[in-house]
Image (cartoon, rainbow, N blue to C red; front, side, top):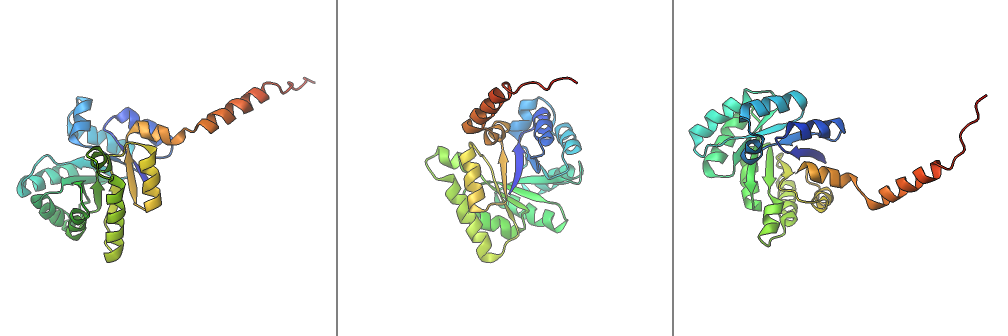
Length: 218
């Protein structure tokens, strides 16, 4: 499974990359707005840090405008993935962009049928939003399992990118189900590393190490 970080904060991206855990980055307009910077400069800097896929989202909702924005985004760097909403004009744009060799990430997916349509349009990634489904009383990871099953049934090449991840449990279920990618907030990446028994064991080792006599100088 690949791990992406879901942020537009360059400091967080640099820290995650330094840990050797980062396979890619996803951003969205809300995350970019939080930086106080324009989208193009943010994406340019992220692409200078990360070699893997970097998703930049279009703001348009009509085919022509989506295509215009998509071409602008794709021109930023070779590793840009154009993030497109799962709407009718979005799927039409995905088909065209895929034909042009531009990678796409179809976002705001909330049903397996939507996911199949995105795969038929040629999407590189599909992004089911598991946390948002959990918020309204549905089981978000059940959707991921349904998409993985549907894609396997028909041999679709679109990768399942689990988004709106809220906890390490979402990541564990992603691994168990066999989805291709999970994109995580920086705080969840830190939570994956932590375990209370690791902390207890390290503290014990350090306490015992303090009792080891120092080597005598010759």
